[in-house]
Image (cartoon, rainbow, N blue to C red; front, side, top):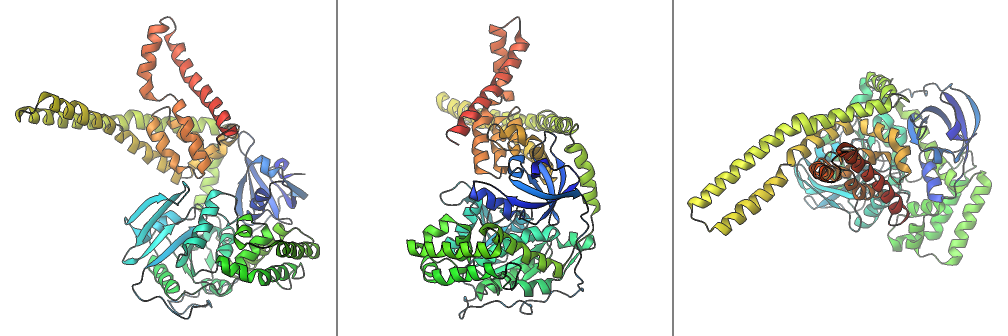
Length: 600
């Protein structure tokens, strides 16, 4: 059986992952779906695609096309119980300089007051933006990474003007699958930040540590911010921070970014590791006596010895380069400038490892990382019990993502948002704005008349500049109100549920489910609709949605439609107007299909 046909409530074990696309296969393995992993089918979207599964203690959403690549064995009724918790005490986290980690420090330290630059990295939805705001306050600016249209935020750390931080895109691994992953990796390798601040969601520590291990392989000074610790402790969980530090060889600071707890200690540790160049004390996560007989351990170290000079010349950490060569990473392979004999020798080493381990190279690497993470969490983490918030969320999901209730619930919620934005609140604020602008224009007109200004100049200033700018500013209240409601929907998690529900329909046109809300907003006003595409995580989806949103007939077109339909179709004005909306949607769909097969 394949994963896309597994019944809800059934468990199964992953037997293999098959895909001609090597990057996609690696992406699936990086998500934890390695051979031998038990998965539980949680639910299907109302339209049957995508689906949600549980594995390794966290939930994961997959499209059916990707799930169909995963072969299963051992199908049975769910018997997954809670993971055995570690027996840990309540040791206080040590102060600066008293940690249990063993970093590798440089011989020379950065002078006090010298400029320092940090990279802030982490998974999506782990509180990275909240932490960035706490670190920088309002002292930040937004731009793009050079050469790409991926958002970049930079800012100076509060009370430390010499220290700045760059907020990297939210990613799950450093594999070259998405543009965001490549941007984050190249920024750390090419820009040489003085240290990395890796933020981890403490409520989902197993999933987040996968990126942490890859960041450690980059061999840069690093500190881990263990976020949402207040939620963990409130629900009976705990983390032995001292033991976690010693196992990783990296300082770990428990924080709550939302409550501004532990931020000062985090900054102190970050400045310390950056100034003293304290690199991770551990880069090797292989088990020399593991179930594969240490085959992967010998493979990585053999490749590392072979490419050490090339890696030094290319300024790429040798351990990171070795693992990326095992993965078949073309970007790293090109950067190392290996000759044919060296490439053949590396392929021979990898093939020998696959024969000894009885598995393929990508699965071996993912298994190595998840095996290490499982051992660490088994020794350091007491999982919290299910919180009241999560229980409530599951109950709400039965309505918001239910097979028969998801679409009606969506229509009610978005109808309420539109009614409040374009009717009650937005219209009232827009009226006040129009009255204020009209008063300013009248005062300016009267003042210019009293001053004896030439009629042409007065008309240019009043009818041209002030009236023109004022007509644009009247959109501001609607944009502000709409963004407020969209922010509430995003922060509450409802946008993710909309994407889950609508993904199957929009994917036929080359979009994801997240594009649905901006396009729907386009029926109210195209300006805030296009602005709201900034919330889309994919550059492809952002550009496609921006191109297609103008096909949705906004409220500003309604008077024009009424005039044309009344003039040309006096006997059927209403059907004609409805047809204009439908034709706009149809043309937008055709344009999406054309763009998806050409420019995108």
